[in-house]
Length: 254
Length: 274
Ligand SMILES: Nc1ncnc2c1ncn2[C@@H]1O[C@H](COP(=O)(O)OP(=O)(O)OP(=O)(O)O)[C@@H](O)[C@H]1O
Ligand SMILES: [Mg+2]
Image (cartoon, rainbow over all chains, first blue to last red; front, top):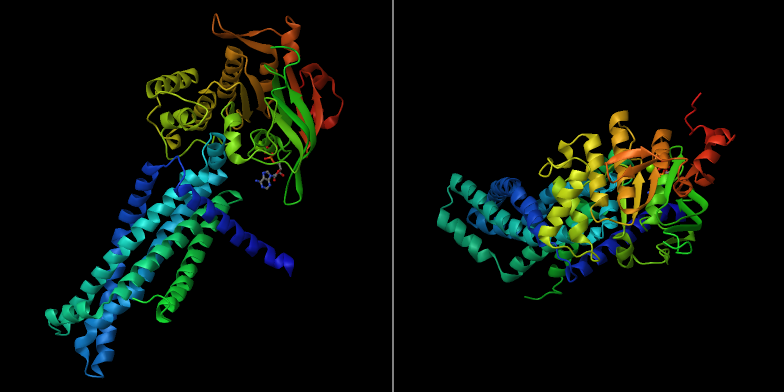
């Protein structure tokens, strides 16, 4: 029984140690700002096409489904409202995070994993560089900066996707956008930005953790990559539940 | 060099294990300044672990390791940077950074170690010199993936020697290379050793490598290796051989003692002349 629990507990412990080191390094020198910008480019700009595509189609499909459901109550006019709230509060952050998790948790895990199995991490330590400072912290900062931005973009593109569908089912554009605008309150915006920020921690740190703990050659890199994507994606759902719970139960009042 | 200067590297009953599996088992030895050590041993006998432990990359379970007279066993990662800046290491798989060019790789130790202060222009000159030393001065802008295995090995040697460290550790510098390239690399190692009396540890699978290091000296005047074995007793005594078996140090002695050993495991590493 204890043996069975040992490895997950060690994983969680290792994860939190890495998180602590990465956070502590934010305020420590040396700062590798070049690496931060490089990662922002890879994670942010690189994810833009898939984020735009998923944003557009999730907004569009949302409008399709909701307008049909709402038409049963004669409320087709409120399609914009439902689309906006669902996107900003939930679907925008979660779908964007899932896309970035699939793309970048795996990318980070495989990159650091290959560095681990080819002794580059050891070489880095031997040459006087802390691998957490040089590799983990820049990826964490970059992900935490770009994921909220990507989410905002996905939200807007999603609303635009909804408006295309709305036009197809003869909802006037002004009506659609007015109901979108009216629907959103500050609490939705805060929730919609806090979620990606928390997801970013999970995505970056899970990728780095599995990458740095890779053992067993190239096969191990494959394993680390898969695990990173699975764990990061599941964490996104777990986190969104708890953050929503906090907002729904009114712990945060806005 | 005084006879009672502290050994450059000293292991005292060092044991290292991974998940209960012993990789180094009660290993003790010491290496004096300017000496060379050749490490033999079957795959998995703990040679790489020994080199990594010398740098504090792997921590011993018990025993103590001294580098330049300082006990590194209990040092924290951040306290090790001083010692590490005085040791150059060639990793078994070269371990060049994939994302950097050869020039950036070789420059890395100069600009990233706290104990080493280096101006940009001076650093660049050192990088070019180190790459010329390994005859790779035309590959500055290339990435490691664009080089052959032997070239990568040489670039990694340049990165190890660029700071002029007094202790150099080479992990299997000739593994998987053709005999010509392998001999060139050993010549570089001898050259690096004799140009500045560097203490050298070298892991290898080829007996010829050890033989070259033990019998030849780099002549600074005419820039070639010369056979000096038997003519300078001090030189003959400066190279010793060690053989590892399943984590244990089973032989530690001179080349003659190694060649005369009747132990079947040890004599397998000796190239028979008859
Ligand atoms: N990071 C590690 N985790 C777990 N076990 C390890 C690790 N590093 C080495 N070992 C084990 O330690 C033992 C010694 O390995 P080491 O790499 O030192 O062998 P070696 O003598 O260098 O072999 P080779 O000649 O093949 O390079 C092996 O049994 C290996 O499985
Ligand atoms: Mg090895």
